[in-house]
Amino acid sequence: MTGPPPITVIGIGNPYRHDDAAGLVVLAGLRERFAAEERVRLVELDGEPVRLIQAWQGSDTVLLVDAVRSLQPAGTIHRVAADGLTTATAHGVALGGGHLFGLGEAVDLARALGRLPRTLDVIGIEGADFELGEGLSGPVAHACTLAAQQLAERIEHLLGELSGDT
Amino acid sequence: MTHDHRTRSFKVEALTRVEGEGGLIVEIHDGEVHDVRLRIFEPPRFFEGFLRGRAYTEPPDITARICGICPVAYQMSACQAIEAACGATLDAPLRDLRHLLYCGEWIESHVLHIHLLHAPDFLGYPSGIAMAAGHLAEVERGLRLKQIGNQIVEVVGGRAVHPVNVKLGGFYKAPAIDRMQALARDLQWATDAAEEVARWVAAFPMPDHALPDDTVLVSLRHPTEYPILGERLVSTSGLDIGVDEYLDHFKEEQVQHSTALHGRLLAGGDYLVGPLARFVLNAHHLAPRAAALAAELGLTPAERNPFRSILVRAIETVHACEVASAIASSYTVPVRASVEVLPRAGAGCGWSEAPRGLLWHRYELSADGTIVDARIVPPTSQNQPTIEHDLRHLIEHSLELDDQALEALCEQAVRNYDPCISCSTHFLDMRVVRT
Image (cartoon, rainbow over all chains, first blue to last red):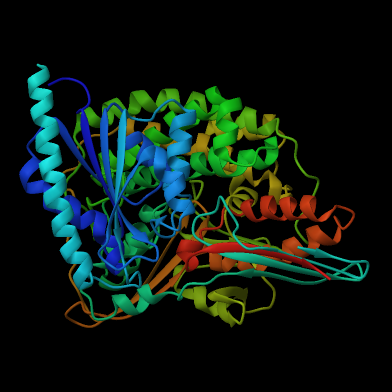
C-alpha cells in the first residue's frame, strides 16, 4: 500500500495518572490484532492538538479514545462524532486532563485548516481517579476492555468495506 | 468582574492558551495595586515522591510524562543528574545526538507557542483558531516547521511524543543515516522558514514595557554554545556557579495561593529564567544566521521588554534549526549507542534549558541504584514570583485601561513567560477583582 493508511486510531493519555491512561490501554488492546495491518495506524498521543491534527493526516476515518470527566459513573463509554464535540463539552463532558487546549478546539482548528478527516469519532471513557499513580480503577479497566472489543469490530468492518472497494 | 470608584479587582478564572490550568487574581484599591497572585492548583510535585524507591534507570521515562510539551527536557536533566551520580561520561557523538533531540523540542515548543498561543494576542484575535482563518499561510508554515521539530524527536528519540529511545548513557539505538540525511534536507527549509517567522513576529505591535529594574536574569552558559545543554549557571547579578551549587544560591518557598513552590534567590529577590534570560546572557553564542537576524531586528543583550520574548523565541527557533542542521548533516553512526552507567551510592545533579527555562534535577541513589531522594525544580515555578512582580509593575503603569483591556493585557503578559503549569503543577484560570 502506498500513501497514508485510511484508518487512524489515536489513544490519548498519561500512564502515570491512573484513569487518564484509558486511551492508551484501549490502544494497547488493539495493537496485537492490528499492529501488522498497514491500513490501520495506531498512535499514542498526549492530547497536544497540533500533534493530533498531524497524526491523522491523510486518513479518512479517525477513531480517538480519551479519558473523560463528567457527571456520569466511572466506566461509562461516551461516543461523540466530531460535529458533536462542542455540544458534548457544553454538557459537561470534558475530554482529557490538563491539555493545552481541548479536543473541541483541536477539531475547530483542523476545520479552519481544512484538515478534518471525513469521519472523526471520539470514544470517551469516564474516569474516576486522575491522581498520580499507575493502574486503572476497576470500572474503567472493564470499560477499556469493552471499548477495545467494540473498536476492533468496527475496524474489521471498515477494513471489510475497504477490501470491497478495491 | 466588579468596578466602583474606590476599588477594582479582576479575576481571570481560566487563563487560556497556557499549558495546564491555573488562575490570576488582581486587586486594585484606590488606584494602587494591592495584590497580584498567580494561582496554581493541583497537588505539587508528587512525581518526586513517585520516583523514590524506583530504579535509577526509570526517571528518564517517568519524568518525561510530567509534561507533554517538554518531555525531552525532563529526560535530559534526569539523565545528566543520574549519570553524574554514577560517574558516567557521555561520548561526544552521543552528546551531539542529545543536543539534536533537544533542538527538536525547542522547535516544536517555540513554534507552537508563537503561532497558536501568543501571536493571537498581538494580532487582536481571541484564539489561534480565529487567527488561522486570517493568517492561513503563516499558520500552515508554522505547522510544517513544528512538524520538522516532531520529526527530529521521532528520528532521534524513537517517537514524536514521549521519546522511548533515550536511556542513561545515551540511546537504545543510534538513528539510521538515511533518516538523518532526510532530516538535514528538511532542516534547510526549516531554517529559512524560521527566519521568515522571526520577521513576521518582529512586525507585531509590541506593548512598551520593561521588567522591573531589580529582576535578575538567570541562564545556563556553555563555553562555546548557546545554552541548551549548559555547563555553568550565570546571572545578570554576577552569579557563576556549577550544577552542584544550585541549592547554595536558590530556594523554593511555599505560598498560600498556589500549590507550586516559588523560586527565590537566597540572596533575596526573584529571578527570570527562559528565552529572554538566555538571550541576554548568551547572545554572543547564537548560531550565525540567528545572530545576524537578531541584530537586524534590533534585539540586543540590553533587551528587557518581556513582550519581546516572542521574538526571542523566534530567534531561538532559527538557532535550533541551524544547530540541528549542522548535527544532522555531519552525522555518522556512532561506534556505540550508549555508554554503560553502573549504579553506586551517592547523589548527582543535572540541568538543561527547557524551552521555558532552567530545569534542575537532583537524585540520591543507594548502592544498588534505588532512588532514595529526588528533587525537580521546573522553570515555571522559578518564574512564578517574577510573573507576579512583572504583572504588578505592568498594571501600575496601565491603570488608565478599562477592565477588559487590562485583563487582556495581563493575560498577554502571562503568556510572555509561556508558563507550563503542568510542569510546576497543573491547571490555570484567572480572576480580576476591582473594588
